Image: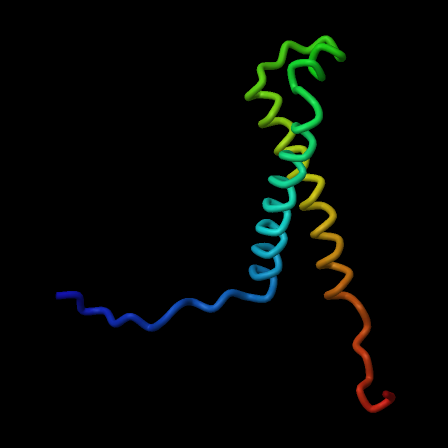
Length: 93
């Protein structure tokens, strides 16, 4: 029998929550952006334009991670701006 008791889920700090939110939102945004972009452009043809020998799957992977980094940067800046915004004085309203 297990001697230790389960004490519930460990609470995440505010920073951990913000990071998890940014990563998840940017992942979903990158997935949608990748689908939309590669519905129009073929990664093999794009690789041929810059003299790079890229497989189709490799092009999809590079595109997805590019969109993920771009979305993470945008989401991270947004989260930072929201957290560093001055507090509104509710008595002034």
